[in-house]
Amino acid sequence: MKVDFKTLALFSCVMISLSGGVLAQQKPGQALKEPAKDFWEARIKGDWATVYRYLSPMDKDKFTQDQFVSSRKEKGPFRYLSYKLGDVEIAGQLGWVEVSYTVEPVGFANYPARHMHIWQVWQEMDDRWYPVPASQRAEVPKKPPHMRPAEEEASLIRRAHEFWNAKEREDWLLIYQYLDPAFTSEVSSEEFLEKTALFSYLSHRVEWAEVTGDRGRVKLTYACRLKDPSLAKSDPIETGVVEEWIKVNSHWYRQLPEGRAE
Image (tube, rainbow, N blue to C red; front, top):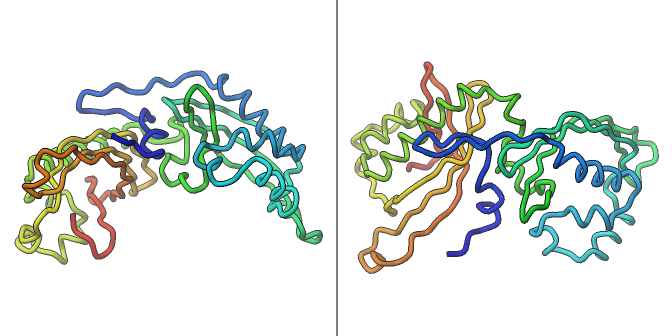
């Protein structure tokens, strides 16, 4: 079965699989420091050919090296003036690099330089490190593990496992109890149970959880099959999703996109 880039890039990410998986071991950040230094030195020097080498395979499919270098030299959008690397942390196939840098826009001589501080997220593929593309930054935790509430994230992972175990058993009444109280206050359990599921959910694995205050995100990969007798012997569809969760009265609930039910 074909696995898309997002699933491959995030496969062995940061967090615990409480249903029997293994916690991804944090490793020293030295393996990432040199690539990060090389990447940022190239940005400062305007060495866009070197920067191109650090683009993800997905981004390299969009344009050639010559096209990338020409575009950066002519249009920017930014000129990088200075940088300083801070802490580096690696967990699984993801890494976080603390970077302070100064940048100014190309073509706006009177616009002041801006001083920025970020945790740049990198991913390891085929024994090489790449900065996570802008299009995929919502698919990875923004901060390294040491800056996130491990106990709270473990609690959220437990709830996510329970929720998905119920989906695999098709225990829709239990699923209803895990949904955001804002949703259940508007939709009764009777109304919810009238809905027909389009898929049978076969398995899942939690890749990571990220908690910020009373909001949480859970990245998981699941396998499902359409509920169609003619497809009973077809291969399952495997896909990845980032779910939104909310904490209400000390409990985590699955927050549904507006206008949607499970």
